[in-house]
Length: 490
Image (cartoon, rainbow, N blue to C red; front, side, top):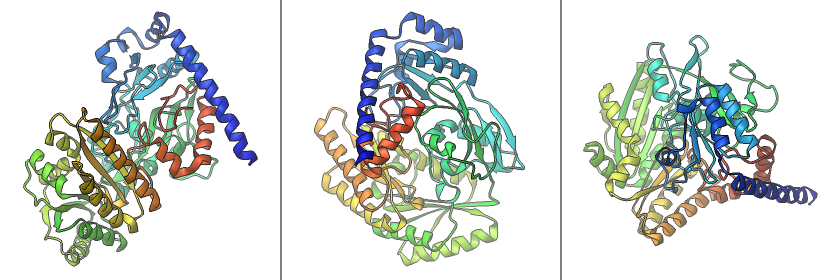
């Protein structure tokens, strides 16, 4: 009882402080003196208040409405980020970190205005240690840029969310993707982070220049910032774990007559311990859309995209074992994508699924949501979700990284139809709660952002949310770091 009483008192104090800061910010505004101070640090060419630039930075790939910042700055090094943060902190101005703007939960939307830190000009690959399988990069480096750089080293960075996202942005959102079943998510592949806190303090989460593989030294500060969505600090450097390029790669497509059969096949492949690299599910609607958008001619049915990595002998064993399970579930024979060009086309189609959905119904928006459940519950939730889609008479698709229990729904939405928007939101909430009821999570990789804050409370409980609030209050006492995201307004 005493613990909860203390939480409520602190929460009330935090609300009052937040309201006071908002009032001060509105009273003060982003005046010329503050803008001049930002220009003095970053340079006049690296500060913009133009409407077009601000609107470009006020929206990501999600359905959330554009809310532009008051000003956009392009720092070139961590010292500038630190000084710019100091200015924002002194003036109680919100800070919104910005990478490539490919998020799906409104993470860059400037709900209270403020200063957007576009980090794309900090784009150096700082240190590569091939013998230790690690690399250190600045926030402007994207995953494709890094892998192009690594091409002749025999190493690669496999975390692949589809978009060519910035690597520090991927750390901030705990990104995942098609390769997670074999190589893990960002959380398993980030070794150390350099972070600028709200007051300009520079923190190295594992210690300056540390790049060990494991540690028992105190709290895991690195994991605290992975997935924090810019609400605790600005990630200005990341040290990442690399992997050896597989000797051989083979991709395949197989189809099933029902959703149940395709998902059951996935679960059985995983339960048999087959070290598959990628296993993606696309329902019949998604396959039809992908065929049309990417000029493919696969069967319009519940489909699995699979990829196998390893030595040639190992691949033969993996493929034989997988083919047997596919056959048991009455799946089709494999359609192979053996050469690199065909594989690239296959996975390019999968990664372009969001844009394919947008093109399918011109003028529409896509409401994208994702959940993740234990393997044993995967068939149950996907079948139930497909039935819910049909019964709700919504235009939507199911696809996802079923190899780690994660799947997505893309729902096509008329931006002028308020009733349809309401029904879609109700469907997404039902899906999130269905995942929670099956001991899963309301988001496997998109994050909480603006859209899933109530579900976060239901997932981890009031005490868990309050602990998060208290952590944020220590690191960001003025509540200026990407306010309005993850935690409901305090």
